[in-house]
Amino acid sequence: MLKPKYIEQREPLTLIKNDLLRILDVSAISKNRDVACNVSTDCPSISSYNLKNTWRQNSRNWGHPMHSMASRSGSFPPALADYFINHFSRVGDLVLDPYSGKGTTSYQACLLDRVGFGIDVAPEAYVLTGAKVHIVKHIEAVEYLKSIRFGISKTNIRDVHPDIKVFFSTKTLAQILVIKERLLEDLGIDTTKINYDSGLVFHHARTKKEQCAQYWFGVLTGILHGSSSYSLSLPCSHSFSMAPNYTKNYAKKHNLKKPDRNVIQCMIEKSHYLQSSGIARIGGKAYLGKAQELPKSWEEKFDLIVTSPPYFTAQNYPWDNWLREWLLGFDFKEVRKQTTQTASCEKYSQAMYGFLKEAYRVLKPGKRAFVVVGDVTKKSGDEKIIINTSSIISHEAKKVGFNIDLIINDDIPPTKRYNSSFLSVNQGLQIDRIVCLKK
Image 1 (cartoon, rainbow, N blue to C red):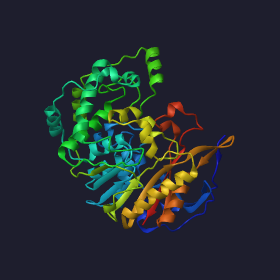
Image 2: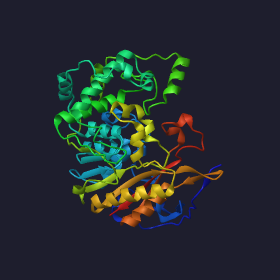
Image 3: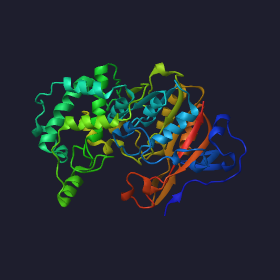
Image 4: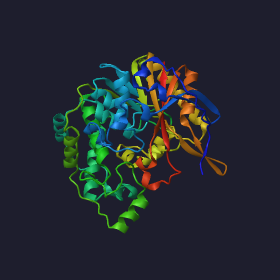
């Protein structure tokens, strides 16, 4: 039985801060006292079911086809990003996601005629964000792809790690290696200079050639593994890179075959689908970098922040994407050194303080940040306790100067989550909470 580590004391409230009134039913607001990791917050809360015209009215597959470039575990729906961008920014505004993931916030901002910025320390997240926000039309992307001379790869298939070979046929893997080699050259990611061990992590695709390479890397990342007609691997999860030994044994047991694919053709067909509804008229920016170290030039630059930082160890992003990171020339063990993945309340609080301090610095005065975090389970001796992560975010946000106006409780049934088939009712994330901050 899970033991909650917070106490809720509900009191009716009649007042909430100005611009939040546009989305609220004031009569549904309560006041919660939440305690987590020895920090407490005392602020109004409301259920997402009581918001006006919320993202809950939209279907699971709502949104532009480009959002489906890749399935990535732990992502919030495009409709959620759309909701806050629509209500709290204007056409032409700059919208930032400092933990951009697969680029949902950044691209939805571009679709709404804002300028979407995204930054992430994970290479596959950076590539996916850039692939979406840069204006690269399908026709010019195909022309670029056809202009590349795909010769024999310098990398021999025999040199490839056996874990990689579990997923791909010899024919398909040979093509992937050649395409990977050429795209890395054009994208200009120098893995000898980007050092996850030292923390020297920064890249930005500036030229059209770099952006075209990043676009195709995004497309390729999305079809690298899965079970669709575009997928290059034997049938497996789209959302995360599965463990090699498990995959090998499962494939043998169920007689699954590694498909021989025409990789270029699969990429082109997928791109055609992604842009079947056109693309955003406004382009954005994508950066490989850390939320705790945003560029100095971004001082009071942004009109809105919508983001979702990691929830302690609830998600192991580097391991979940180890195959995609291999595609981009990285080792997930190295990437993990710079991610916010910890079971320590102290270390997590320090990381969130660093992120929120930067978020406060780059946000314009009077503007808002919406931070999506989830309650997670944590062991305390022989007991499992529920940590209300929003309490930590609120505590650290106050320290850097933010006002915490509201917490939106977004109940999500465990069966609706990406890995629900592996979870019992007492596992996983039981609820997301959106912390509404104002500078």
